[in-house]
Length: 383
Image 1 (cartoon, rainbow, N blue to C red):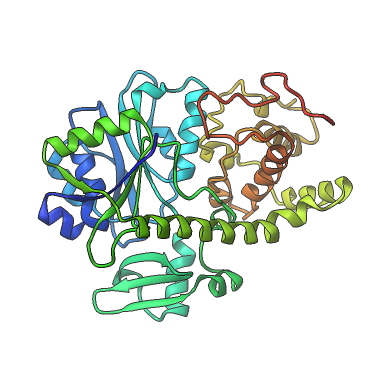
Image 2: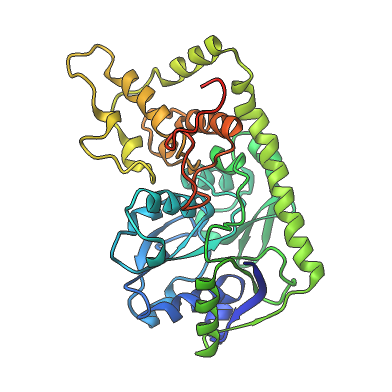
């Protein structure tokens, strides 16, 4: 199912202070007491700093307004089987939750997924450096940032600063690499997806799309109890939302061509050499394994079962892990973020995952009922 609305908070303070009319904040408020845990993100300093919080008191909602696009936290770690959880997350987080459900770490019936449309996230340290060099402002001056009409925009209390995101990314700034070629912008695997694409200018609203009966029930309950209001969106702005999504996907396709397709076009021997050279700085800290939202490795995981006397434990680890994640990598980029020697691990995992997708048609994290081809013994020609 799919139903679309414009939505906003009925609490004037939340609507004024919140992102896009405070709809998500008030929806979260309506879920306190309805679920065992209600999980979202809270700003802790500048708009580039925050942490995961569990909202247990409706009054806490006033502290969580605002989208934080520089936080890259593994939200799937906050769900577990037997605990009814409502959680706010980005599209890649949502796909990670779906993969965890498929691995029996949680039940889809127990989880309410509230998705946020995402044009990409920003690496916090590099971004704070960039706004000083490129925009000539300080991080603590920024009250909001967004991608709008192909520009990266930073807003202070007094002024708005804007530059072409293409130009910034060509110079090494802008979004995280994994976000640049990600083409999953509206999290349709969620029960509800929210964002500001397709909303009327100056009206302080959220565009809301409902994808499940559970989402419809939650929205209906929040409306009946006076937390939020909704109205039917105009066809014109609904179409604009679709065009923005298409534009984001075109941008992703361009970056996929630059980053991944050039590797896919190599011969097997050339590709192996590139992969080997890229992994050569690895120090064996295994931080990538710990940061991965879908791996959930334990001591008996195959990627950790190396002979201690082997001369190549690190290369074996990566070889097994590349194959292990070929059918489950959702492209979040966490592995690259935590690597202490700056190996672009997400690029390698997505190289394998996208090649696997091209050969089999399978994409991880899109359905709890979709079993990977190799796991069901359905081998494509050539395997």
